[in-house]
Image (cartoon, rainbow, N blue to C red):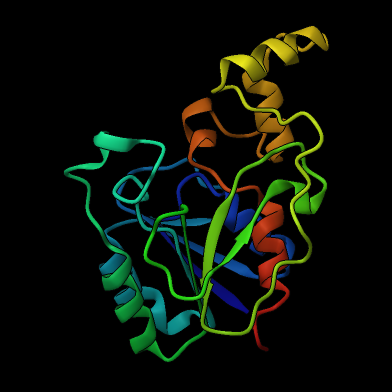
Length: 200
């Protein structure tokens, strides 16, 4: 099966779908170091050109407009979720839309790295056009590898970890990415799980 990955970034989501057995076509308006077939273009153009080849479509529209953590920095960013949903629904194909908590997704499930044995607390929402449930509850008892919180960085250093950014990318299972790419990435295990739920 072919999966069209819109707003593909550096390939965190795509890698999970590939692990689930999908052939990947990635679309992004910015040039990317993407590990699968990649085309630099606007998401609408990508959907029009490659949507016919796809059996399922994933989209990760920019999250900045919806991010609670960015606060007042969110103004000026596009709010694309409604437009993306309308376009994907119009294809009649199974779809997944990913975004941050606060995004206007319909009946989403929330996935966390701890559900998949990762030392990462990265909560992301997924709206699916097919039935999907969370595999288990989050477990935040352990230490999360997070290079963006001073308290966590100190605790990691106390365990002997010096290159916290590298530790974070490895914990996410995206070691090929640079720091900026990993900051916006999704652990592949999230989409490997979702890929297994896509109707054949």
